[in-house]
Length: 206
Image (cartoon, rainbow, N blue to C red; front, top):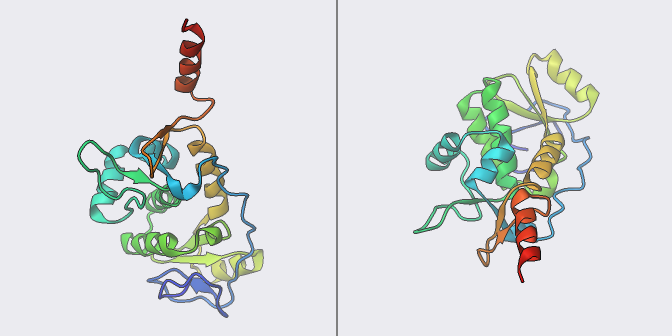
């Protein structure tokens, strides 16, 4: 990713905005299958509690990050009267990555730049990314040779395979409540206890 937010591979190494490019890095991680939602992804949003559970953060963090612009929900940006924020799959993915970067002590400036770059990149490219950081900047890399080059330069002390985070988020969201952005209809996972309770109630009705 170049300094202007372009997610395409470039001739040299790529750094997320706010970091100097490191020569020679390319992409090498194959993307997983992606979220297997029956509802089209662009029409499905996740309320705050579901986003928190999938990302491993508290609601206080979620609210603070939304209010400060670190990670804002793209499905429903602000709760209206009687409503609530709704987060997309991408949003939840970014939330989880931001949490990991914060836990690793990466600078807030680098985290903000990373979050913005992840939110503006094409969704299909995210699972191919591997992020490395030295605490001051965040870089994108792939193959073992590229990783070795980064480590030799002393700029890779913490790494995140975005494809693995993608899979974790997908698995978690499959078990959590969602909402159709277009109709407001609540979507309950088939194996959720609430869904099972509804089926039992339906069976006992005369």
